[in-house]
Image (tube, rainbow, N blue to C red; front, side):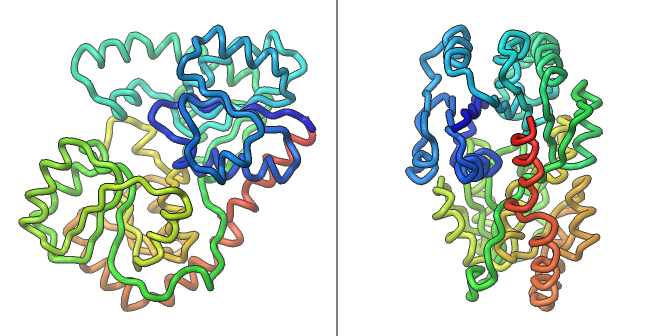
Length: 365
């Protein structure tokens, strides 16, 4: 069995909540690779953990230890996913000549990224700015030495190039999910569901528009921060029909939970971070709803909103005041939107299909 090592050092991103990572693990297992995963913590989900032959908790390892262990394993392929991984690996391609290094890029590293994820004030922002260029140089060196560079779509490929990441062998792989067959979609559906981070960075513009929002069956599900919890009291008072479920669910439970809702609500507030503003085909929640046959309501986000309009997968809105009209239009034409989703998803976005060119590349290297 050929060895493949996945380095997953991104802070605050459990493998269980990253479809690009855990679905790739599943596909690599089907291809009979011996799978190594380096991750700062314990992989909680038993099914995903069972797909991995060797899991290393890097929490108590320094950079030297991690690099030494990778060299001792001597895998056929090493796959990085974010700049944290690239910075760790940046010069190993010069040393490990028999190993092919790959950048399966999930986040475009910008000077705003760490502040977007974890804003901690002026001094924290200064430290992020000071660390950015050294890290970016290492990420660029790593990318140039890779055999394959993966990004989600043409839009994000252009944005990545703006931030010094480009490669002659680039594959476009959307951050999608495996298609869920129609008989598993669920029949009793109503209301809208927003899932994901419930914090100021993501939902600021949505909450600011709540005063113009009519009473609608909206559920917000995910992990909250202090800002949102403070806003929640105002939201509940203003809109009794809005429900909030603060929870973390396994992939299986998350799927079953979503099936009860009719429409997926996607929301990204405008940001200085070009990685967020150009979300494109990197939005996992977007594909999760479509994989379950749920039409979506999305804001004007480059790439994603164009796809929704082109294939009639739901409604694009400018602000939350348009939610009522969008929801009613979808519910009045529900079978039409589901038919469009079924037609396009299996052919264009099903993960089992879109990951195939990448797996073929691994075999050729």
